[in-house]
Structures are given as C-alpha cells and as structure tokens.
Image (cartoon, rainbow, N blue to C red):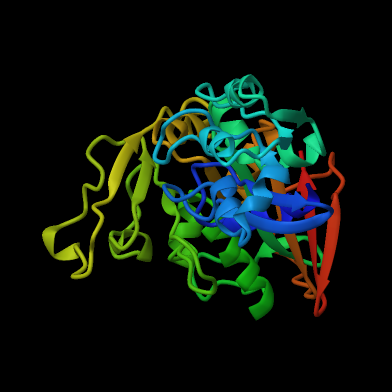
Length: 349
C-alpha cells in the first residue's frame, strides 16, 4: 500500500479533478504489475496496473492493492470494479473508501457480490491524506487551499517600496519548487499590491505541468491592463466590486497572442473575501488554490482558518525593515527541508 501511495503521487499535476490513486498487483509475494492514474480522462490506476502484467494468467491468483476504492460507475472511463471481476482477480485490498457520491462503497459492494475477497482500511489515514484535495472539494464544498511565501531570516517578505525591482528571496532551486506547486494547483491568487509592484506572470516556467487559473484582487479596477496577468495567455479571473471592470482597458491593450479574455467576478468587499473566493472556485470546478501573497491576502486566509497547508521559505538574508511576513505562530511545522542555506517549513492545519 505504501508503494501505491508512492505511485499515485506521479499524477499530482494532471490527475485533477480526479483523485490521486495508485495500484499494485502481487502474486506469490512478488509484484507483477503496478500503475497510477496519470491524467484526468485516461485510464485509472487499476487499469494501468492490470495492463502492465505480462503473464495475465497470474491475475487469477493475484491480490490487487489500491489506495482508493475502485469505481463502479461509468464516467469518462468504464468501471474499474467491472474490469477486476472480468479478470477474475480474487482479492482486493483497499486503502480508503471513495467519498464521491457515485461510488461511496458501491465499488466494494459490487466486488463482494461477485465473490471477490475485499479488505479495507489499510493505511487508511495515509490514503485519505493522498486525496486531501478531492476530499476537501467534495465534502467541504470548497477548494483545498495552500499558502506559500518566502521571507528573510528576520521575518520580512519585502522591502518598503512603492515601485522598483521586487525582492528575490528564492534561490534557483527553491524557485523550481514554487513552480512545481503552481503546476499542482488548479488556481493561484495574489492581491492588487503584489500584482502592481511585482507584475508577476503567475505561470509555470521552471517546471513541467499545466498552467493554473490566475486570480487577482482588484477592488476598484485600478490595475493597469498592461500587466502580465492580463496577457490573455492563461485563464484569468479578476475579483472586484466594479461590474464595469476594466474601465480603463481599450482594444489596443489586448495582446496579439491572447487566448483567454479576462473574466470579471464581483464580490462583496464589505464582507471577508476568502470564503467568497472559495465559493467562487468551487462553483467554477477548481479543486485547489495556491495563495502566493502578499501579506494582507495571506493573513486574511490565516485569520479565518481557511487554509489546509502552508509552505514557508526562509532565505539567509537580513532586510532590517520592510513588509512583515504573515504569522503562523499558533502552528508548528510538520516537516522542514534545507536547501543551500534556504530553510523550508511545511505546515498542515
């Protein structure tokens, strides 16, 4: 089952909105096949594991380990439970049950009704953690929310400035980690100050993976249309109180390579924004959100307890004064990493 979990993580960039799933086939104490769900719309983990077996007759004596309950319904692919029955696999060990309403125990029921011996709950908590985004989206009706920022060793995320070159706190290696996080999330959010001062592209350049949907808070519609965020190369949502956004944009502001028109979504700025953003993303079918800053935006999610994990990078640099980093004082990091002097702390709420 631990091998199932390892395999499943290979689908972290392309499996969404489907859950991460890994499968291993064992016969006479030997692994004879394994697979994972690589991409939404393509074969599930069980199918890939079965296809990888060279001596197919061994399937009739094998045990299938799978991190998530096999599906029993027709979606973009046929039911995995039917394939397991067809191949006469006699035993199945399941990590955790599928909370999706179209499965929710029906896969196990179908297998048992066909005479398959089914065991459930092996490394259940680890398998549930693997599908945390899927669980959060379907059970809590909101996206899984990850916070991320980099700070100096004396606790600042930026200098005091109104313009100029942004402060680069990440190293080339840790910047790759940032872009990997972007590729693993459905959407990414920044506030208007970060958009204006840093002019970020919020795309995936230092890693291989899909581009997230960009969100930017622009309450009064004052962000200039020439920003990278409005280049039309990724789907971009503007969160504003103005129904006429962007009032200042003109036809000549549209880039030549634009593919996506900017979408405007009106929010109630007299109420906390994080719950409204979460509701919007769930309605849009976006399963996960990476919040990159700045301080006010990040702290608003922290103060409301509306987050699931956080990655905080500490650079070996002293600024002395500037914009203070968000505070996670109530929480202890669950793990730390060190990369060439840069300390990365990982928090889970």
